[in-house]
Image (cartoon, rainbow, N blue to C red):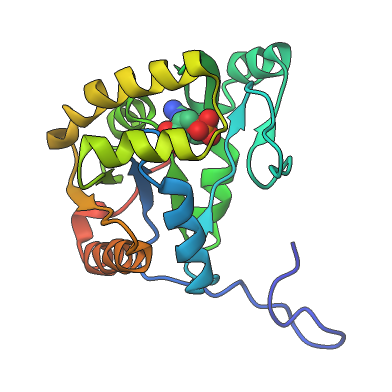
Length: 217
Ligand code: 5GP
């Protein structure tokens, strides 16, 4: 990666950190709560220099419209196992019958370039990351009601009837764990921008908190 000032004849300078206190930020919540939409809204609001959205790995089938390397790194069971064996995953968890994992390297790269590493992972993953990186900031997104969540899951038509049932059942278990989080944000229907703004405010506030300073990942 070339640093700023690497042009001809000019001495190269180290890359200036984007933020004072780069943090590991976990955005979690049950399937169907709108995490992807929230992340998309955050990307639109343009924090390119401050936030890095870590692409995670999964063994699940690619859905129409998803792009390898952007939506996820789609891997085979064998590739996933190899990554685990090589200790390249900060956490690996089976979620709704598929494997998902956070690449250590993606997180490291974000932090070393002075950006907050934003991770969109499930509650099991959040728990593992928190135990390994106690300074991580945990944000839990909840729906206004269970009914709204179920409607969303049905409306997106990406899951089979069986998958839908698994995700619904898991949602109740996941919602019961909201007290383990630093912040709980309600994703009000039709107000995804407000949710994105609220999360950005939390990140900005916590950035001032020296207790969030990271050790090694
Ligand atoms: P989906 O299959 O709907 O894309 O994701 C299912 C769930 O897995 C979501 O809650 C999503 O946030 C979570 N997830 C995505 N990547 C990871 C990861 O690397 N680790 C864990 N633990 N969960 C993940």
